[in-house]
Image 1 (cartoon, rainbow, N blue to C red):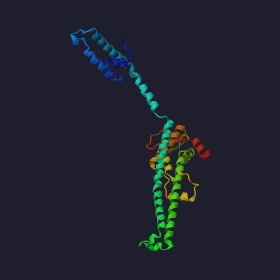
Image 2: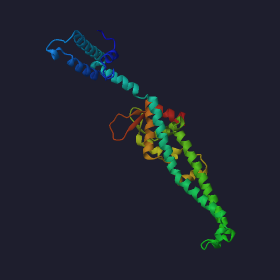
Image 3: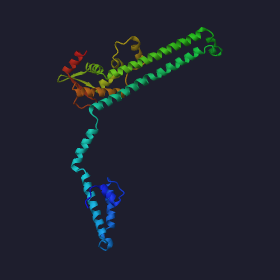
Image 4: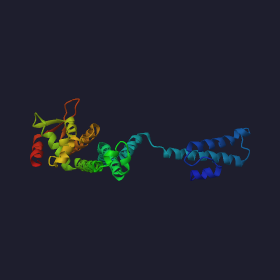
Length: 299
């Protein structure tokens, strides 16, 4: 008989394997075929039914073999199929850039948070302690250590002054943190990128063929310089003085990631080129006409 599907074979012979297990189905049929072989009866079939069953089993095996070969991929097509699957699975350049941008932003956010968290906790805790002292100042008059101080208005005034100072420090710390968060966004803007590039190439070294040379480390050092990184020459006095209290630098690993992010983008745009001479340090070049355009047109 001519089989139309593997399901038909499974149903006819009550096979246990499913329709996708070709090898297992074939083994089951082979066992049934061996049991129905005429050699089991001295070389002859015991009946026409046994002969028909034997032939049906053989046809079933042939049908599975033919379907197995149809489902196999030719060897010469495997390489092309792998390439096609790989190209589909690989993210596009835009997706890669967006993912890298998100990761670096998280790194910078972590840097900023770690920079201010102790100051915020410390000033907040001290403010709470001072508030508690003011609230229970009358009870402290009996305290052997500070009782004499709180019997006069001086003790309460000192606590109020400290409370006010710690509250000011907390607010100032929070404002500075918000300022750094704004600068984080500025770093990824076109304006921020242009400012960084303009600062780096203004210090670049002239080389032959009307080009200027700068290094990857120059870009990283710039990001680790509070003055250039923050671009805050016009900030008010308290924020400029706060550099002595809070570092505006990125961590080295974050600065390197951000430098690579910007330099790769500038290279893909054709603004800069990777320097071809072999060196331990990664160098880039920029043509003189592009450099002049950036320094003068966008200054």
